[in-house]
Length: 586
Image (cartoon, rainbow, N blue to C red; front, top):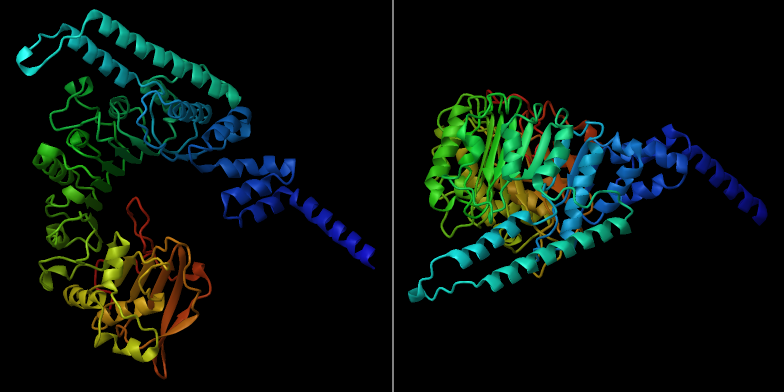
């Protein structure tokens, strides 16, 4: 009997493996696998399955620098892979204080190799990554210039200047050349170790890497890259005619883009069709970098504009704010604007098109000022991201000035601020939930004030960061929802509330099928809870003891009439339950 059972199991396994060999079945199973590692393992079960699934595996690739050499080798050896990749996102390599860093040089070379391979068929639509030559040419030239300057400059003995001798100059130059030769040798060895084919003298400069990216110019719709003069020249010359989304990030160090910065390219006018199809532009500047130069372009069909980063333009801050204001004013097609940190004070004048605003408020000691742009009558959706415990602003706007806002999102950056807004004691039973209005948390108090201002609000989102592992008492998600509902109970217009919590340790509450809603806005229909990426939707229904939230079993049955037409780069935490924000919903 045991033998028969064993044979039966073997036969079943054989049939299962044969079934997997059928491409349609293999692809159906593959579509349910979430982990990239599990996808790779499943694809390796049978050789013919591997090849039939390869097209789907490489169609959209997000990869770290550690896996980049293997991916470059796959592209090198597989025509299917080269002809299938339409989206490539390469995570940034870490910062290194070493100028002649072999690992960084090898990673940069691999980025160029992948661009060369994917550019063969010209089908790449999305690219995100750093574009840089593997040889630190700019640093070497700067160092050599400084050495020569020390040798030739006039010495001022009063300030202790020392003129470099010819021998010192030649020795320093020889050391630089020796370090460069050693880097070349080590790079050649790394390529050999991974069986990668390529001329080690290729991709030394950023311009040569950009040449590989330009092979996909006719298909490239989305580009997220670091700023460089070479890249800027390509963009302003109209090299990417179908580009729809562009994100540029400055380094904040050697780049040092300021308002007086000029390039030979900008001595003449930028072609009017250089950014003809661009719909979304995001600029991220750091340290003393200023966006003024980058805002000299014209985008006739621009819908989304974001500017942020840690930079404020240094002494050019006023020029930066003025350039942002002029850019927004000159692009009447804009529908959504996001301003972050030092750029939040930028003035946005009256517009009939702008319907969505995002403000990422800087971490400051005092309570931030109210963004005047929120008073624009065309605005329907506002997202506010705070970096301090004071949710909302020192100045509370009048009720009449905020009647046009339909959707409001409030986020906190840090765990400490989230914990503060829910300061204990945390109570989980029904009786103490009912008493939330008598013993409210800071979150409840703030929401009560906010809802008194946004009298026509239809959707409200609260985004916190509360890890389950904490030395402090941690509330359940149902408790947090009860605090939110208590703060909103006076709103007649509110239809949907969403609570999102990023749980860093991955230990979230078990799914709750139903919970009591003793205090809630009278017309509330939906409650959405997103805990560490796991989203559940609840209908609010009347019961004998008040209201109860009942979980909807299938995510695809969300009553979404339409997503936000123009969204921010990071995904909105709302799929809007209602599509028309031109008039009150009730």
